[in-house]
Length: 116
Length: 108
Image (tube, one colour):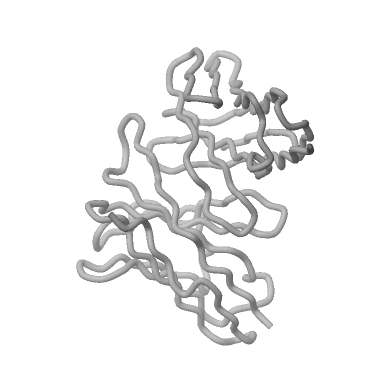
């Protein structure tokens, strides 16, 4: 049973370019979460999605960032016109359901974005 | 709002016991998680507490006091491979709020 998959593992972009990060949840999981981890910082929640729906995007910057989780295919976090401050590790996690007791989130290996 | 505090770093020797504390103030509470994260890798689940008391799982135990907004992770019989960052996270309804993590260095 494959775990959460993310690609690419490493991504280098120049300022002003677009970055697309992909996340395939574990089999049977329909809930996806994106987190950002800056150097020396904790994981910061960005957005929570179910298939075709954004449930909570309270942690996502209002500009340049967007996320989707289509009916078919992986979840995508898109960062437009990247700036150096976007350099970070972006982790995706998935869970079988959203709320409820003991609903563990399983994390993917992350995508390390470097903006030159 | 959410605020989670844990020590930045701790050191211990192989074979010893170490306790990593976590205090939190949150607007909603549906459980507290501990994750382990090695450098450059994904966080991996260690434990979950939603009721007061101690949960034991092998060499690792986690304690929760909801009235005090306090948890700790206890690691026994430390091994070199336990050197990692330990993340305390509180769940609201469905999202997790993480502390900055405690970097544990285990020395021979």
